[in-house]
Length: 282
Ligand SMILES: C[C@](O)(CO)[C@H](O)COP(=O)(O)OP(=O)(O)OC[C@H]1O[C@@H](n2ccc(N)nc2=O)[C@H](O)[C@@H]1O
Ligand SMILES: Nc1ncnc2c1ncn2[C@@H]1O[C@H](COP(=O)(O)OP(=O)(O)OP(=O)(O)O)[C@@H](O)[C@H]1O
Image (cartoon, rainbow, N blue to C red):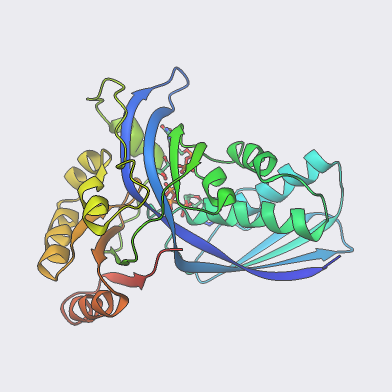
């Protein structure tokens, strides 16, 4: 048994996000293509003699205790396994918080996967996804660990066909967004029709860019017009396409190669104080 491990906890982007309806509990019926990218928090997990679960976050001021979703993930797993061991979690935060990049959900999934291995619980990936769904709608996707077509509230997952070899430039001007507020403000326009990425065995770059769509842009881009300007700027800088991820406010541009995404980031760094990050898909 390993008493200590260090793991990467990646961010995600939504290549498309269609809102198809609203359930009675207020959650929304979705159809989304999701992909992890190589911007990662670094998470250290240690099993300790002292009982209880503690978390420490470097980089950003974040809830230290039960409000931290990484702590809640550990409690959910230990309760399900009927175990009472001490856990220390240390998170080096690199993924912007409340930015549409799923950082908290990713940390939760990382804790579920790591503790399952460290404590030799032998839970299936599907069981870990079920536990993850109790923590947040995005958590099962990070447990799944592959590009996914997500339906239902975002927790019903199927693998996507291989996606093209592109690079993304993430851009956030420092706006943080409450996901709950964005969903609450959304006026529904669709009648349950299922949008989909093309059902080819291989998705080309053109297919990917044609599929870029996010219904939540209607809310977040209207509230923050600067985001619309950033989308235009990404296209001027050579992006094949640009979109908001999740509920925002991070935007991503699609580039042919990491060098091109880096060049666009360099130009933006000279012009603005926006946070930028060139990434590759995982
Ligand atoms: C915007 C996305 O990140 C896209 O991947 C997700 O849909 C949101 O995932 P998440 O933040 O993990 O979601 P949760 O933590 O479960 O819920 C946050 C808030 O989003 C809203 N929510 C979330 C998922 C969903 N299918 N419908 C919703 O309306 C709920 O009002 C909830 O209060
Ligand atoms: N370990 C954690 N990392 C990041 N945020 C956390 C964590 N624990 C709790 N939170 C809280 O969760 C909220 C959402 O943070 P997160 O970064 O996951 O949002 P997001 O990227 O917009 O998520 P999504 O893309 O799923 O909408 C924040 O208000 C933050 O304070």
